[in-house]
Length: 353
Image 1: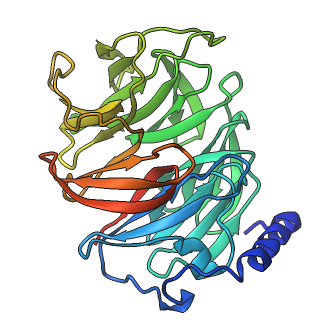
Image 2: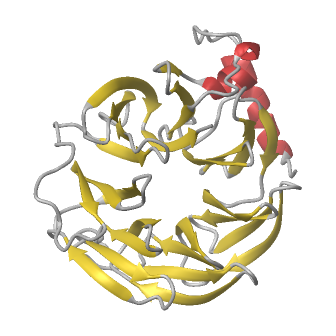
């Protein structure tokens, strides 16, 4: 485990600053969620404010615990929490602007390791039990991480494609989208950790999933007016993962801004945010006309579909300043709970038994 002394100093100062604050719930030693289905909510916070946080939602009891990271560990989470992934019973919590990955016990929320050495980490993907990839916003590399030692073991250089983002895998190939000022999906051969191909899609591909037929779906937002890389209509692409050929394309209106592509537990229905929440069967030939969850004058910001129940979890950032909300829906779009979250809730990580 790499530890940087300056970062630890910041954590120590965080303990001093926050030790007198009352978070009004359980003592940190009382968290015990063994054997229960839950949902981690990653609250980004605001850039440079250091107000990122982690919430935990007990799915069966419909009970939320706020600020569980600081309450369990006595330190702040950091600046801009980006994503969380669970692998082999350990949570990997990525804090982007702090350049750190915390590994945590997913039942007690205690930190078990601190991994540093990144520029601006975004997402982690586990190729297998001994190798993971970590994408980066500014580093022009994908980091190779050894989950056993919790150390960076190598780099995949992505010259010309600075901002790598999400990752999905089909066979030996790992696909990653180049989100910022780019229009490429990079293809990585995970057996030799090399980029072997790239797929040209629309401007700013922001999210990806793989369906039950092993097709790769990529959603692009088209950029924006004045974007130095260009501005075009957003699109949804369906790509063959064997020959990397685009098989289908759905086009949106120029001023649309689709994001947060997800898929249900049977891997046959896509969901995404485009002001409202929409769903699309993988065999559809046109985009839907009627939203699954209509826009209600607020800021839908994050989206996740339970891989166990296909329930829909939709975050509302409200105004990006006050604490947000999470709305829980049945697969039939019936709202069954409203959950309090932190500032800018955007990421979700299911802990399912």
